[in-house]
Amino acid sequence: MSNFPQFNVLEEAILVEKPEKKEPLGVLFWICVGWIGLNIVGAIFANVLPIENPLFQNYSLVNAGPSLHHLFGTDDLGRDIFSRVVYGSRVSLSVGAGAMLIGFGVGAPLGMLAAFRRGRFDAILTNVMYVLLAFPAIIATIAILSFWTPRTLFKIIVVIGIASVPLVYRVIRTATLSVATKDFIVAAKVQGATDRRILLRELMPNIAPIAISFLLIGVATVIALEGALAFLGLSVNPPTPSWGNMINESRTILQMNPWLVIFPSAALCLFLLCLNFIGDRLRHHFDVTEVKL
Amino acid sequence: MLIAICFIISVGSFYLIHLLPGNITTVIEGPGASPENQAKLYKLLGLNKPIYQQYFVWIGNVLRGNLGTSFISQTSVASTIRAALPIDLEIMFLSQILAFATAIPIAMRSARKPDGWLDRTFSAGSFTLLSVPTFIVIVLMVLFISVKLGVPHTGPSSYVSFSQDWIGNLESLALPAVALAIGSFVVYYRVLRSDLIATLQEEFITMARSKGLSQRRIMWRHAFRPSSVALLGAAGVNIGGLLASGFVVQYLLNIPGLGYTLISAINMSDYLLVQGIVLVVSVGVVLINFIFDFIINIVDPRISRE
Image (cartoon, rainbow over all chains, first blue to last red):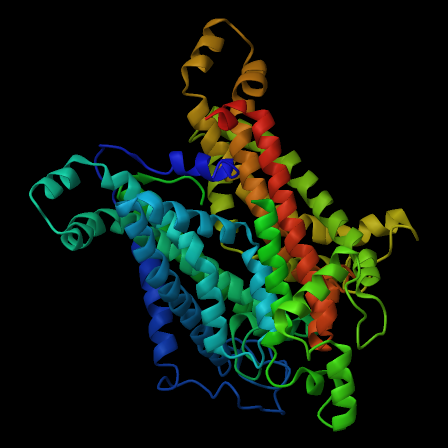
């Protein structure tokens, strides 16, 4: 492990707890939560909402600017940009949720177990994960998705999810390590608590704050990655709208229709900003100072 | 460690071609290919041998610098990569110079007066920019700078090669370099700022202050060196993402670097070229990471002694 000094540096500095009063969350925090909630509701109920069909092509109204009828205007095929942005959130949200479900589902239990058990199990697993971390994940994702055709939403979620496992493992393991040596864990062991009880009832609640704030930032990272893949044409196939592939489609007609790039970009950036902000506020709120991961 | 990682990368890139659905000969020759031709190609590719033998034949060729010949363009994959790689390196080099040249002085200013107006502005600004992916940065830059303002030599397809005209080359790479630099700046600024604030509270800084050293000398000689470890660590981790952002930028602006070549190879189903680029890029990133680790050890000898 001495080959990876940068990780050692990060891990030593990862957890510094301050016995201060809890910082309030603030109004902006709740605005962000509201915006995320609104996006989720919009994505789930997109086909019930009174908006136009995102695939309907109205050739008599091509590349129109924003109007009362088409809030965000129409694209080069006369499709309503507003409804495409709303439907497009489905792809981003499912990639964010699905990939992190895989990442945390595999990485978090392994990380907790490794930090709790220590010994050879921990040593082997941690070394394997560090080898995987050295592998440029973005390049690997592009490579696998370019060969594993035809590309579906499911495959994209699986590939990004697996790529995130080593990162999640590292964060959760480090967080657990800092808690596992505390007195109350020793006390629980002395009292004869089972390993399962210690893991679920003692360790888990204590690492939850870090896990949640990292989860939110992880979701944001994964959504940005999907956006970049979609921009390169390596995500879900058109005509299914996603924020990334809408921006990709707009790149050839930038001059004619700037709205087609501005609205999906704004939707994506606002969503990421809210996620990052919530994650950051939560981290401050729970008094966890974290070095860049 | 390095050898183990390179071995895994080579196995991974070798296996990529087997991820393709169905029979690879149909994929290469198209669905209308005759069975005889398919059988011929099958043998030509060595696909009738067991898979571990195929790997050894392939890796033997790779180590001799032979990455195969593209089925589409009939040119050697290695020479295509050799032509494209310098463009990526140039873009990365330019963007990193810009990012370090801006991030280091601004982070130092910020850390000297945490919560001052400069610190607040740049901290809030960098937090916001953290949520803007590079592909959006570059699209918006092209939209506003080359389309709306009409600045020449910055739009798509305006790439000029370095040997042709070096001023034109720098002009055409200005937008990509700035776009990548913004992404790196945000990371470097935040890492260096928080590390400097911590370093400035150490006792040896108090000591230096009580000796009456100048503010500038304290910042550069005493505080920057220990904090630069975190900066270098961040830069090393950042390389992979930087390369991928470079791909995005090249794709949008039609700059014939590795990224542009990769995406067009993917779209033309030029699988050997894709495989070659993936192999070269992955090994390159791992090597750069190891070089950074090495530099970190020189800058901060405490790490290797532990």
